[in-house]
Image (tube, rainbow, N blue to C red; front, top):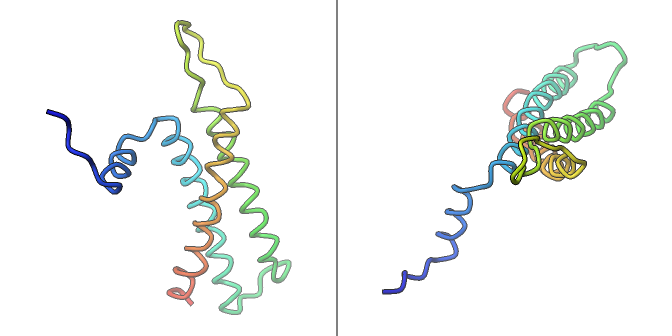
Length: 127
């Protein structure tokens, strides 16, 4: 008896539950860095919105650029460190620029989404 056909949603849910470990590691490392740096950016943004006189004045644009660059670099570096290429029959794990590229491509949407949630969702609740 052939297996029953699955719906589109069932197929995507199964793919989500059984994601490859390198992808999960790349996303988790980028997400951890983005949340930590996004929280720091949010604290700075809320302080400026409440009228705090901080040294250097209003540097939100520069802080956002530093946030994005730091998330991309940290996500790429962490993924390069924790996601080796498949070993095959050897015992030595290898790392190549492809591991770093996986981290970079995972970090791009994560950096954007965390910043949007911080500014559009959390900031109005705190100001």
